[in-house]
Picture 1 (cartoon, rainbow, N blue to C red):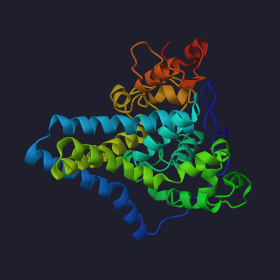
Picture 2 (picture 1 turned 90 degrees about the horizontal axis):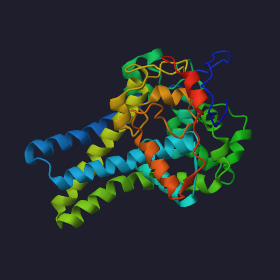
Picture 3 (picture 1 turned 45 degrees about the vertical axis):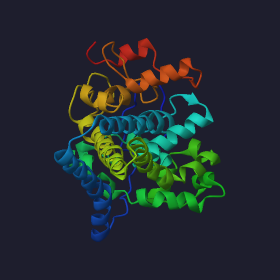
Picture 4 (picture 1 turned 30 degrees about the vertical axis):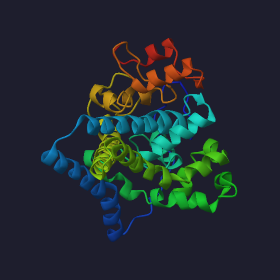
Length: 336
């Protein structure tokens, strides 16, 4: 598998290479993982619903919710997705670090783990080996349950710690467990040791996603109640919404919408998902040209992540934004 997808139309997925059955989690461990990943965030969201029914939501609460949603979604879509997973542009080290921190605050795993899972998805889209295809296991599997058959998610950070002295040595290792296999999709990232060290502080960055809105709520209102509301709206509710919207790209993004580009898989363009994810909802566009920094291939398509990248390019903070040629776009259109 190529680590960095090109700007040519996406190749046809193949099943010619044998795939290995992932190591299974025990029943008790599966329940624990499900509770941590889905149950705790849902309880946080319910706390927000309870608070709303009891006290309503103030303009400041809403501002914290929307502001933290946008910051962490930028981290996921622009940072984790378009930069770390696909390297569709280049940027400065400080901005790269900021993208990593913002994406980690979303609580969906570290930048390297997220990128490894996503590159695996693109290597086997809708074929055996795809971690979260609704075509293979159903809509709800892709939305809520797919990670239960990826024990590598829980072991990935420990694997990087084992190779702390030289992370790139993972590439030459003969071990063939699931964590090693997905790590080998990251030759470019594993060779960047400062990035790996920053990645390994994922727990700190995730906690920051709850500390910041709590501090903001407390400092602005000058009360402990304000701090608690900041934690609920900017932390707990925001966390659940960003998580479920991002997971919906796995489910909705491959089942609901328009398939107008020749990506040779079930990916769909969905305008609602595009707005909620800052562009990732143009998922058929993305799968047709996964190496593109922009996914707004029609004049009426709004790609907020791509607009942000173009603004940063004007400021000289990002460069080498990759995108397909007009001829390649025309050739890939099914409805031309």
